[in-house]
Structure formats: structure tokens, C-alpha cells
Length: 217
Image (cartoon, rainbow, N blue to C red; front, side):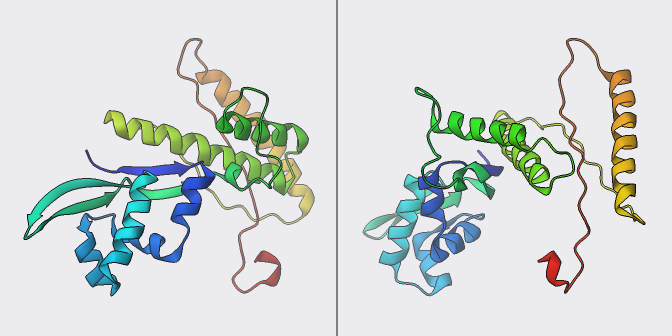
């Protein structure tokens, strides 16, 4: 089975396993299959050290064996990353003390609840924090669904719209947002079908970063 295109890292332990510099290098290299012997030669590292890190990545489910090759005196295992890209769930980075959800809830349930709380707490369509919360939720949901679709051998149907608008004054941003919201509501009403597959449309805007500008960093 081919590696999935994207995998969401939503468990702190898996994230800690992957974050060391050498393991990030191994994950990047293992987008293409390789053995510990090959990795050690290419990265100019002792094979024992590479084996140690490969074992840790395999135990965390970040890489998997795709082939065994008989060699003189041992069997060489060929490994590959389980995904071409690993994305970090922003919920994993919640400060200590905020990790537990309601009694009986799983860690993932708690993370989802925190995101929902964030939406309620920052109910301002013009707040940068709200845009970040929405974007984080989109990363979380789309990555999980895309990985599940990959495993089933189907394609997750999504769409993306991008545009750049130059506003003359801050008030224009508010007027533009109101008109866009009205236009989206009209188009959505035309296509909304009871019993159809529900889609979530997210529209956000932020200043285009200016190269070298201190306030954009």
C-alpha cells in the first residue's frame, strides 16, 4: 500500500518522537524506501545510531517496513515513511494543564472541545485569533479526512478559492466582508440540497506579507 499523502500528528508522544533533527532528516529521506544501511551511508552516521532512531520512528507509527532483504548473516529491513507529509495538530501545542477534556473523554475529544471553546470565546470575524482558530480546524479536519480517503483508495473532493484585493482604508475591509458574506449566503442557498453531502466553506483574509517588513514577521 502506498504512503498516504498527509498524516495529522495529534498525539504529543508521536510529535516528540519526530521532532529531533536526525529523525526529521530520516522522515524526509524515507519518503522513498531505504534500509538502515543505506541511511547510515547517506547521512554519514553510525549504523547502530540510525537503527536506534529508525526503531523509535517505527514504534511511533511514523515509518513502516515495506520489504525484507536477505543479507549475509542478517535480514535487511527496508523502511518507508507512512505519509509524505506530517502536519501538526495545533491542539497538541496547548499549554500544560489544559490537556484534559470532560470526564471519560479521549485526548482527541478534549482537543476538539478546546477548539470549539476558542470559536465561542473569539466570536469576532475581524479578529486574527479567530482566523487562526478556523484555519487550525480546517487543517485538522481536512488532513484526517484526506488520510482516510487515501486508505480507501478514493479522492477527497475539496475546492480552494484564492484572490488578492487591495483596500484603500480599513473600513473597506468591513464593507467587503459584509458584502462577501451576503453573496456567499445567496449562492449557498441556491445549491443547498436537503440530504446532500454537507460542505464547510471557510473564507478568510489577511494582509499579504511584505518582504523585509518588521511587523509582518
